[in-house]
Image (cartoon, rainbow, N blue to C red; front, side):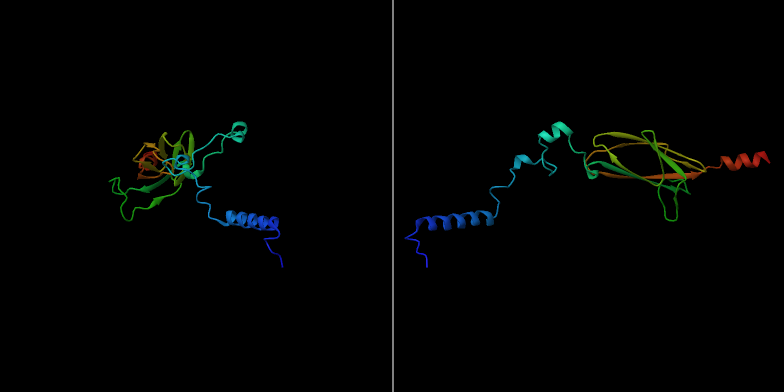
Length: 165
């Protein structure tokens, strides 16, 4: 049996091991907690410049940090520009043009930058959109905007077909 009064070095080694174990098992609330200055108002960590970012550039923003627009078209039978019960959704009938990119409607357009204004143009064949142009401003991070495009049936092709007979 070891008596610690005879061997002070053993006592010191055991006390150091116990102290180290206590530090490792203790909750790290005081030592590793981030101060309130390291967080911004939106709740994310403040970006710090580091050597990696200086050489390779910062990481791209997450998709949830951009705005998203969802566009749907429907047949507005009574021409009131409101979506009523029984007015069916139009698939692949009209297109949406945003920054020279054409999307068939229904469209899901992610990755729109915050603080930017976008112009949406609507065109179609067989159906004529009641809204020709819509300006959208992405105000906040992760904003989702839904656009319902009312459309009327284009009667011009039928008139041209009747006149040619």
